[in-house]
Image (cartoon, rainbow, N blue to C red; front, side, top):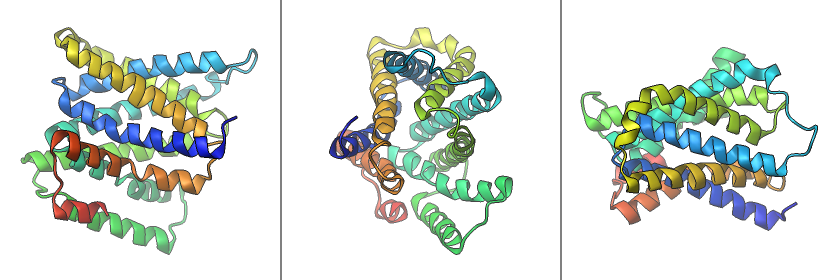
Length: 270
C-alpha cells in the first residue's frame, strides 16, 4: 500500500501523461486511426501484463457476466481515441484537448436523458459555462475549416467519452477499474486493426518508437498510476486533478511544439 503523498504524486504523473499523449499524435506522421489502433493494442498488453503480475489465484473477475457492456465500451473507446487524435492532427493540441474537455457537459446531459438523473441548478450553470467556453475556444465553427473540423472531432471525442463514462459507472461496482480499461483497450485495438492494418507497414522506425512510448508510458503506465492513486486520494481530489489534463497538455505543446494558445482560447479553457 502506497502512502497518500506517493498516491498524489502518482495521480499528477498520470494526468500529466494523459495530457502529453496528444503531443505524440501531433508529431508522428501516422493517420489518427492507426495511432488509436496501435495505442490501444500496446496499452492492453501492458495493462494485462501488469494485472497478471499482481493477481491472486481464484480472484479473476467475471468478464463473461458483463461482456456486452465491455464490448460496447471498447467500441466507444475506439471512436473516442480516433476522434481525439483526429482533432489534434487537424488543429492544435490545445484545441483538441479543450474541446474534448467538454465531456462533463455531455455526462450531465446524457445522465439526464438516458438515466433520468436529476439536473441540479449547479449542473445547469456548469453546462452553460462549458458552452460559453467552447464559443471562446474555437476560432471558426465552419466545418470546412481546419479549426471547425478539429472542434467537431474534439466534441465527438467528448461525447463518446461521456457515454463510456456512463457505461463504466455501471461496471465499476462489479469489476476493478484497471481490468475494465485493459479489456476495453484490447477491444478497441482489435476493432480498429482491420481499418488500420493496411497503413501499419508504412510507419517509419522513429514513429513506431513514438507509438510504443504512447502505448506503454502515456497509456498503460498512466492508467496503472491513476488506478493506484485511488485507494489513498479522495474522489473530489481525483476529479479536480484530472481537470488539469488539458492544462498540462497545452503547456507542453507550448514549450515543446511552439503552439502558443490565443488569449480567447485561454479564457475559454479557464
